[in-house]
Picture 1 (cartoon, rainbow, N blue to C red):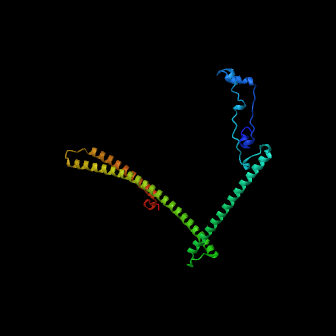
Picture 2: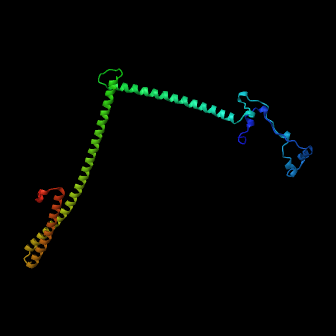
Picture 3: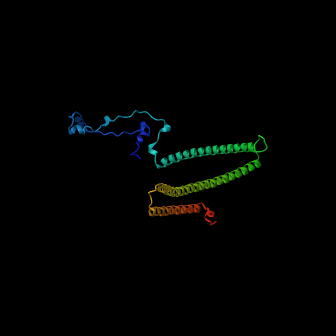
Length: 253
């Protein structure tokens, strides 16, 4: 502790002891030595006259410490006194916080009574009684339960709406797929038949077209092509009926 704190600063300045060294008078000749020599280095040692003594002023006696009687017991007594002071301060703050909490609790109860008095059916402006408070708590609990019930119904309704939206999207995708496939086959069959009809009309108006075998083969090719397209459209219609559940159209209902 003495290495970290200068006890001379805590004691009475008038009782401070200053160390003094005395040298032989022949050593005073070192003061006149040239700079940089060994004699000048030795002369750097302070003598008694080089010590600057502090002003001989005194502190107040209540601030002075008697270092001669300052032992470990005194240290622990000082620490114990300071600890008791801190404990008392903490206790005072604790009591203050208790009073503040009690005051807030009282104000909360007062506001609760005023609110219950405002919400009761008697129409009086006075504070509510214990029965009114019990009825208020009962109504508040019923209101919370009703709120939770409605929240649960809202969540269920939201889930149903989300499911309906998914089903609608799936239905739209399936209907679009069916329409694209069915309409493409129908347009292809209509194009083939229209082209074949135009060819027949041109052949009928031309008296020189007498290739009966070529016309027969063309009829057969058109018939096969249209039959395949009709079969594909029938399969698409069956698949769409199964998807939508129209079993009566298929004769299976």
